[in-house]
Structure formats: structure tokens, C-alpha cells
Length: 395
Ligand SMILES: [Zn+2]
Figure 1 (cartoon, rainbow, N blue to C red):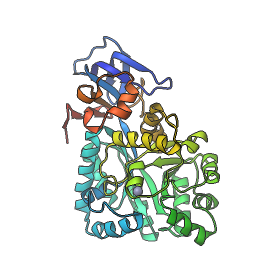
Figure 2 (cartoon, protein in one colour):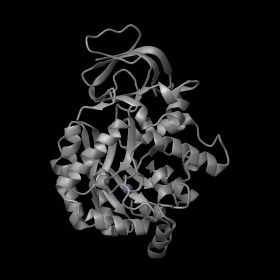
Figure 3 (cartoon, helix red, strand yellow):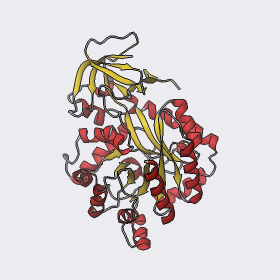
Figure 4 (cartoon, protein in one colour):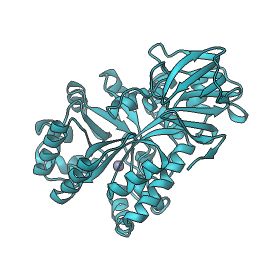
């Protein structure tokens, strides 16, 4: 398949090259060639379009899709209470339907890889397989029983596009024995382990009272931090905790829209994390606290939040933000071969229509981060297969 005459190609390669009026040839599921005047029988005309890597959402719960707009005026702990009443009604069948609806929305908005954690993992996996979307799936662990469910799902998981992970809900939800079993299991199977941490000031206070340590210090003391660890939220953490994350090479998923919507109060210390070379990706969190899966909106919000918070327009650049939504997301999820447009990489690609709101283009990265939204996405290719063509979803 040939993507012909792309007006712009945002490669996200190590040099962060931008190409003009170039073609990309896809063979099987990989990028075979990038250049001019390439030829192939199957062709998509990409003139008037920006070609870029598909976006990577490092944190969501697609099974909650039907809960969009159910609780818009509550802080986290009140929100959890009202949402959990709704969640109790979800069956595996409804969770499958919700996941498929979530995937349709995510693809429409140009996301090609999703980390998804929730219950009923087999039902969610079925939706990912049907949609043919790249994913990392985990069953959220709260206790011994859900840990058993998680291990059972992982032992049966055989998929070309979906990898497994293990997710501890949070320090407040899991006792130490459960957390240690999650660590042991993920280390032995070389799996990604994930946890929600530092989302609210109350949580930070409660953990300090119970454990005599700050949240990240506590996680470090039991061996949770590590290269295969993804920490979600990390708003209410100190500089000392940031150094611990950096020292252990753990990764962070930043979810600014959800955090602001739940009025978490603080701002994740992104600038400080980047100064310590921590790998930070972006995530939407579920639509019950976002309320959509638009990673373009997430990119813009992240940039605005940190510039504003620091009283410094140079606090974060559009290139750094795009990195978080592409190649840094790849690293967060321990995936290879995606997140940039380079020969030999897997063909997870999207095109944006330049028409309307992206004109004029003075800086194409700026256009993608600040001018675009998810509805600019025209075509989506995952693993070399078209999933959306000229805004029509194929599943
Ligand atoms: Zn979450």
C-alpha cells in the first residue's frame, strides 16, 4: 500500500525530520520505504494531508464508555462512589460493547495504541481483536481474587496485536501482600506493571499516615518501581520522589484533562520530571472523567497547563508534547517498533486533513498540537491495515 504525495510527513525519527510532498510504502505490516515517486498498485492519495505516527494513549478504561457524562461535578472519592454504583451494573457483554464503542471513538480521533485496564478482560480483548487495534490490556487487581483473574487472563492471552500487563489499582486499594505478588509476577513474566498513584492530596496524606512514608517512597521500599513500572497520575509527589522514579527508570502516564476535571488541585510536576529524564506519556483516562478519548485535545491541554502553571511559555514545547503522545508512549508501554515513521517500523499511521482549521501551516508540529483536534483525522492504519478511510470506520 502506498501513501502517495503526503503534503507533510511528521516522522518523529531521531532527528525529528519533517518531509514535504513524499510517499510512504507499506509492505505487509511495516514501513518498507519513504521517499519520492514510489510506486504500488494500492494507493491512497495523501495530498492536502499530514501523515504522522498514530497516537498512543497510555491510560484508559474503555469498559466504562457508557458512563460518559454520568458524574461531572465530583472530586475523585465522591466520583468513585457514584461511578462504582454504575459500574456494578456492567456485565461482560456490556463491557465488550463499551470497549468497542471506546475503540471506535479512539480510532476516529487518531489513536492507534491503547493501554486499557478494567474488569472482564476476555470481553475487552474480544473487542480489541474485532477492531484490530494495538493494545496493552490488564485486569485491574485489588485483592487476591482479582489477582487470580488477572493471572488467568494473562496465561490464556495469545494475540498478534494485544500484549498483557498487570495493574494494581492503587496503594489504598491493595494490601502490601497483593502489591508484592504483583511485583513478583510482573518481574518473573517480564510484564509491564502499572499503578494509580499521587492522584489526590487526600491519598498522599492517608498513605503517609498509614505507611509512615510518601507514596513513591513506599512503592520504592517494597520494590514496585523499576523499568517495567508505569505510574499513573503522579500529581501529588515531591522532588525527592521524582528522583526515586528517575533512579529506578520507572515511567509516568500524564492525564491532565481527567485530573483537572476531577479538581485534583495540584499540577503534575512534568517539567521537573523531564529535567530528570523520566519517560512521560499521555493518557485520557476513562470517558467517565474526561469525557472523550481525543489525544489531540489531551496534547493541547497538557501544553497549556504547564505553560500556564509555570508562568513560562517555554516550560514545554510542542515537540516535547508530541513526543509524549508518540515515541514516549511507546517506551511507557514497553512496546517496540511503533511511535515514529521510519523504514522497518510497524505501519501505525494516521493522516490529518489540512483543509479548514489547520491552514495556514507555518510549523506543522504546532499545527498538530495546537490547531488540530481528533476530527481532523482522515485515515487510520494499524499494523499495515486500514481501520478508517476518509473518516469512515471499517469496523
Ligand atoms: Zn485510571
